[in-house]
Image 1 (cartoon, protein in one colour):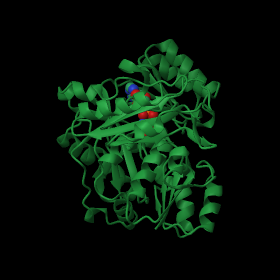
Image 2 (cartoon, helix red, strand yellow; image 1 turned 90 degrees about the horizontal axis):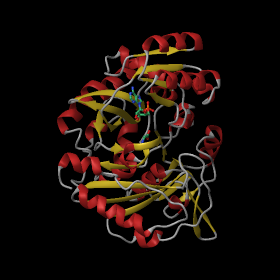
Image 3 (cartoon, helix red, strand yellow; image 1 turned 120 degrees about the vertical axis):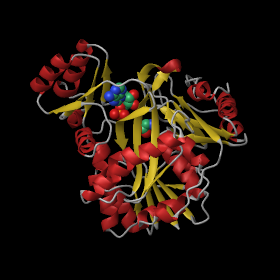
Length: 427
Ligand code: AMP
Ligand code: GLY
């Protein structure tokens, strides 16, 4: 099979890596990819954000399968367009992608289908939103409804903070059109977990649960990022709770979308807040998580192509999705200054030594190749991932690899996976 992966981050490197291990795949392309994907596939110089250029590119190729990584092209209707051209796509249609691309849609959808989520109100008018806010008080969460690359959510502990956030989103348009509609939501507390599932639009098969670490610094301090590391399985969500998440969240979502005329093919991701053995949905994503994918796919035993093909064909129920009984940890190494401004183009040393370790994959996120050298090219640069029989061993192995890798100003958290160890008591 000729397969195309759309995207350029750590998630897409992990997807390309998993697909490259399938005996069914004879040729693998990534658009646009990074220095990591270049080592196992052919990079195609077409941006993942440019749906019409991607469509044009695919028309000239004979891809048997296209796997879309990021949300933006899905929200723009890339899956619809490619499918209209007769191609097989793993990733939901534009209408289904609304579950991530519009928080207002997503919240109304959850309310309509009885999916547990925080109380909220939606506004298009600043003065009305401001009145609601002043009456509601803090803490409160201000959310730009549209896609804002994970940055459009501001958790506010005080009313002045919330007023400032609302002003930034609605009046200064800090996130552009994404903030034309605003969701004001009750603030939840607890631990977060990511439950991702494969779906063919009817059957829902959950993956191992992952726990992301969004704040930049150790101990969950500092500004929010795209995710500084992950581990799986996150035992804070046990098997019984996964069953409840499927029954109360994922299955009703897939069934609800189908009832609205949209068969969801792809990955449905529920970001949960856990408290006292209960859960609420913080958000839905219409795709694999990043960096969740980097810890989930190394634990997947079943051929990813087999699962993806079954989803497209509507026969996921026939596939047995098996997981290795191991643990995986991904430590994100980021550019100094991230999530603020950071330099690019710095040479990275030690990649080969780190990759030579057993049960280790260095997933590239923001890198590029220049004259045979790997250079930094983004905020999140690498997802250093290792797996082993226990979480403690996987964590130690991941950090051993991290210590072999160097560039000027590299930063990373030293406590990825620590939450899981606390719970399992195996530190
Ligand atoms: P979202 O993009 O909606 O997942 O929000 C990004 C992050 O903001 C989440 O991972 C949470 O850490 C935080 N967040 C979102 N909604 C809430 C909420 N209702 N209460 C507390 N924190 C939230
Ligand atoms: N790790 C969070 C996300 O992929 O949205």
